[in-house]
Length: 121
Picture 1 (cartoon, rainbow, N blue to C red):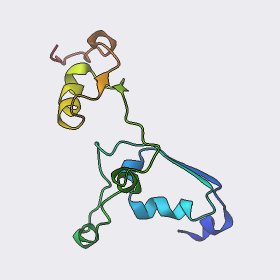
Picture 2 (cartoon, rainbow, N blue to C red):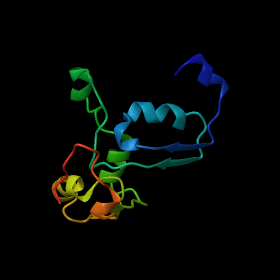
Picture 3 (cartoon, one colour):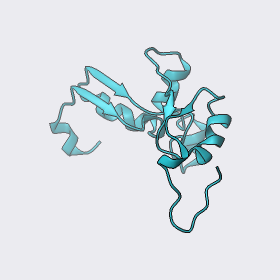
């Protein structure tokens, strides 16, 4: 951390997209006095970005979120419905990564294709 962080205590820490953060990056604010930590993310999506092979080989390419999820730390809630993607785009990740457990919370007409693009129906 920087000297700037030495002046601050974080009693509550919320990580959004925690599955994309390296474990070391999440530990810095947690170690600054956290009494409550919330990790929000999806271990089925993008992992942390690691550009140094030696770090990856040491197991530092796993997020704290994924490590806790694999250890069955509770509470762990799986997203039930996605609302961001057009159903034609979400079909692949829903099948490949979620085994049919994730549903679309929108219909095709909720996400019309941008002008000049054709999205399968």
